[in-house]
Length: 65
Image (cartoon, rainbow, N blue to C red; front, side, top):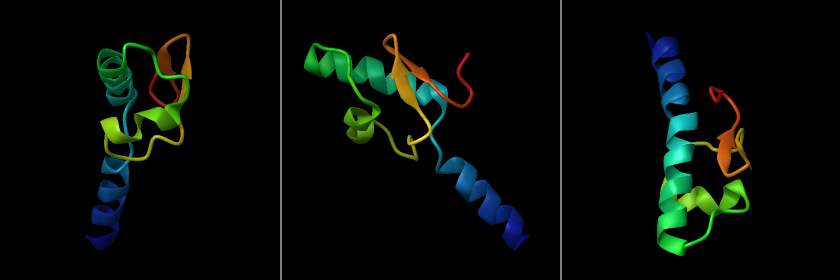
């Protein structure tokens, strides 16, 4: 069970594409401009966002279509 719990925690610690897109919208609403880099979103969501980037104003990375 310990291995399964560790895998579940690791997956939960990673942000989803949907969460990153929501953070982009929140950032734009607060600042009035779209974020230029994914690092600008760190205060807007929890989890690891290092696998994502911003392309055309939207998240690009795992789970994004």
